[in-house]
Image (tube, rainbow, N blue to C red; front, top):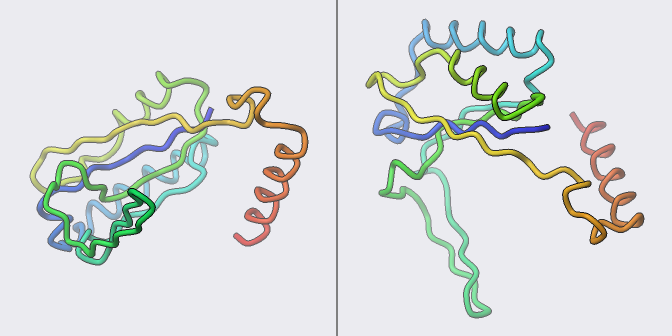
Length: 142
């Protein structure tokens, strides 16, 4: 099972405040532990929403809104992609994350990713082959 681990933003991350040297070292050590355990597949921090945009599709129209966005609690500061045996295992790993926010408060969301088999018959052999080709191409690009 693959999970996306979403670190929610706060006022400091939205202000572009960089993490301390100690937090960078702690997160580096934690990421090493994840990699050695075969858990971490990917992960990165995200720039503040002021450097982003939202694209909304409605009624056949496309609307682009430039950041920043005001609802900090709904914004993301970073993410990981992990491979875990269960949601419970992902939760146990999240509990070990070094305290990521200067305020002493943080919220991390865990969301399971869809796998090809989750789509049932709609994932035809042709579509499955196409998806496997895409994944192979992406792996070569890394």
